[in-house]
Amino acid sequence: MNPFLQQLIEDLKTFSSELLLPGLQATQQISTDMGTVASTTALLKSIEFLTGLIPQLVAELQTTDATHKVMLSYTPSPKMARFSRRPSDYQQDMKKRLLPAHWVSILPVVEIDTRPLRWLVHLLDLQQIALEKVQTRTIKYIDDSLITQQGSSNYARNDRATLLNMRSRLDEAQTKLEHARSTLMRTVQLKLVASSNLPYPYPRSSAWLRLRRFAQQLIQPEEYLPTFLHNLLHGTVEIADTPYLYQRWCGVKLLAAFESLGWIWHDDPTGALFLGGEIRLYKNDVELSIWIEPRLSRRTHPSGFICKEVTETHPDYLIVTPGIYGIDAFILDPTTTADHGIRQGKAKYLTTIEGIAMAKVAGIPLVRNPLRAWSAAPLHKPHCELETSDGRTGTIPMHPLDWSSQPMLEWVRDIHNYALAWGTGKMLRD
Image (tube, rainbow, N blue to C red; front, side):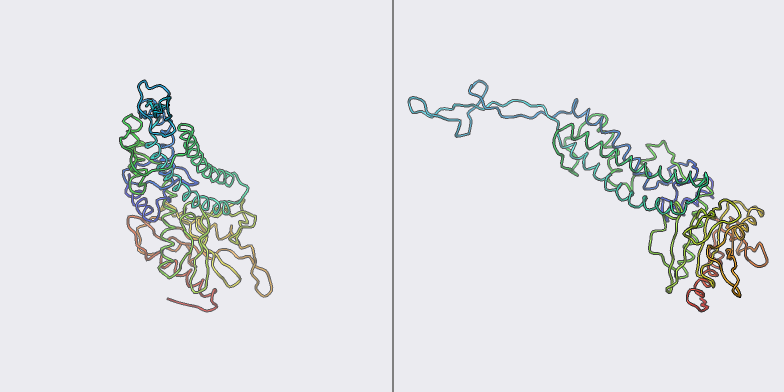
C-alpha cells in the first residue's frame, strides 16, 4: 500500500472507520492487516457467518452430540423396576398389607442437550443488539443523504438506488437472524433462554469447534472483528477509492478547523461525511451549514442554492453562511491531482450555482453566486495559493504526508469572520 493511501486510512480510521466504506462510490481492495474494518461491514459479515453456520450446528448436535437423559415410567410390573415413592401407588391386599400397585421403571431418552443451543441464542442476541444500533445510525445516514441526492439525472437515480440497496442489506441481515431463531425453535420445540455460559461439555464436532474458534470475535467485536474478517475474507476488504477517501479526509480537517475556532455541532457528522448530507455548526447564536456532496439541479434544494447553467452539479463541500442579503456560499472541492488546469476548473461553481432567493441593489433584483470556489490538493506548500487576483478561486495545500493545519485554518477563518459579521450584525475578529 502506498504511503499516501495508508496515511488517509489511518487518519480517517481515527475519526470513524465508517468513513472507509465505499458508500456511493466505487471500491478498491486492501489488506485487513491494518485493522481497517468498519463496524457495519464487520457486523454484517459476522451475522452472515453465524447464521450460515447454524443449520450445520443443529445437524451435528442432533446426530453426533445427543445427550442421553432418562425419564421415569410408572408400570404395574416389577420387572426391571423399583419401588415407587408415591403414596397413591400403594394399596392394601386381602391381608391388610400395603403393597405397591405401581413400580418405577427408568427408561433412556435421547434428547438434544439445550446448553449449547442456549449459548447459541446468546450469540444471536449480541448480533441483534449490535444490528439494531447500526440500523438506527445507518438508516439516519441514508435518509439524510437521500435529501441531498435529489435530481432526475441518471447519477441521482443510481445514488438513490445505492442508498436503498444499503438499507436492504440491513433488512437482509435482520431476516437472517429471525430465520436462525426459528430454526432453533423448530429443533427443540420449546423456548430457549439465552445463556452467556460456555456449554460444558462443549460439543466436539467440526462446526461447533469452528464456532468456538471465532466466538470471542462475536462477543467482543470492537477488539477482535478485524482479525475475524481477515480470516473470513482472505485478507482483503473493500474500501472507497482513493479520491473519495481524500475528499472525506479533507472534510475531517475542515471540521477540525471550524472546531478550533469555537464552532460546535450537535449531531454526529459521520453520516454526512460518509454518504453526503448537512452538518450544522453553531457559535455565538450564529448558525452555518456544511452541505456535503449536495446534488444541485434547477429544482429547489434545501441548501437554498440551485444549478442554473447545466443540468446538475455536485460540489464536494457547500458552506452556507449568513450574508448581507440572506445567505451566502463558499465552496471547497478537493482533488487528488496537482494539475493546475483542474484546480482552476473549480471556478465553474461561481457561475453555475446561484441562490434561490435574489438580492436587491437599489431596488433591482440581483443573482447571488457563491463568494468563493476553491480546491484542496495534495501540494507541498506552506500557504494557500490564489488562482485569481480577487481571491475568489484558489487552492488549499492539503497533503496527508506533509500536513500543516495553518493554510486550512486561515481559509476557514475568513468564513468564520464573515458568518459572525453578518450573523450578529457586527464585524468580529479573533
